[in-house]
Image 1: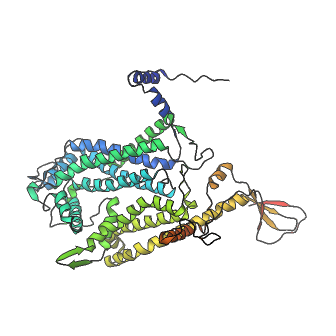
Image 2 (image 1 turned 60 degrees about the vertical axis):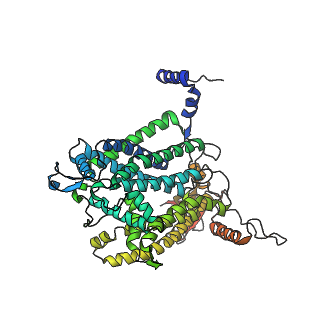
Image 3 (image 1 turned 120 degrees about the vertical axis):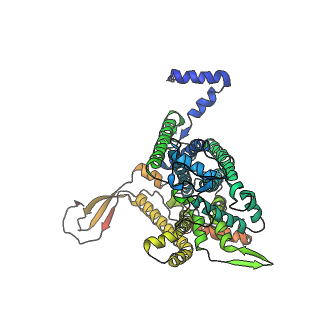
Length: 552
């Protein structure tokens, strides 16, 4: 029996007809309004980054109206009387003016800064979710690379953003940036002069702040906006990945339609994000530039710390030994060059290459639309936790002076601790994480094979105790059985002694060994139909002719 589709509300139908009469786009809107989005809380991490970016654009536009990107020196005579009569740049004076004289200016400054923190934190959390669930696999490698590019640009954008007020704290960061640029061989001085426009600080006619302002409000946001647009368009075309559920398959997307369910949820979530940021900006102080004063090359604030996402570079610089190489009249400052390039090069370069390395090692060239549980890929999860440990230790090392002061230990002791920890910690993290994943796989295999503990102890006529297990719930069973068991390793040579394709040469040997390391300790999880069994419980025997049940 056919069923007539309900008529669309008059307001919606009128709007669609208006657009269709002029653009012929009704079919497009109707088709995309029914696009399905899977429902899982972790998918909102990427949306938080999007909402934070929107708030950054809005608050940044407000701040641009009053900020003066100039290094021209003026004598301050404003509402913050403690700095009256102090010589400072127009950039710093206008930042003070926004904070104390523009209605809502301080709220907007803090909202902008908190949104930047949340933007970077949510991108980091989103990328970790994508990595640990294997959501970067074919055909989504390009979107993974776009995400890494956005995070890298976000770091540079944040550095330039908190450098604009030209206060003592940001000036300290710029001095470090200058040293890093000049340490790059051959092109370092050119890059330094291109960005800074001359010696730093230049005084009354400097070009640094105007250049940072142009990069911060025009170039980098434009590139990030283009990457966000490309990211969303690719995701829209490829469909969103999904967690393993009852109705979800590699060929079918199961979830809620874009309109009205997803639109209502994402709209509410944007308001929640904005509300949390507004609450933080109202009640929690961040970057009080008036306490630092204008930048002075002869002074430095105690306990200077950058925003959290730059802490890894700060930490690597602090714990690096003073290594320098002098040859042919030129000095190569390894004590600056290595910390500036190697840590992030390892993390971001490794992350960018990982999808292709994994596909090469496993030989898996299939398209994947259902995510993988982290426990089912112990090597990937172990490598991810090793990278997180490496990043986190360097981040902590960026506060080694504060750690030494708060915990009353030697600064040299904290420095040497981190020098060893960044090598030992990731290895331990990999080993422990992999063993945990394998243990969870064994637990899943036991649940599928024997069922779930019921809490009921059964005594046999012989007096032995056993626990009754109940079959696992169907939804849980589907999630557990989503694991793909490792395929048996192909023989290196056939019956005639001819090497198998892909195993020849050094690269073939390396791939074979890596593939074996990836799969050799895999725990098979299969449904054998053994459910509701009794399992003997260790303990004293009990005499009796009848079977009895004892509740725990």
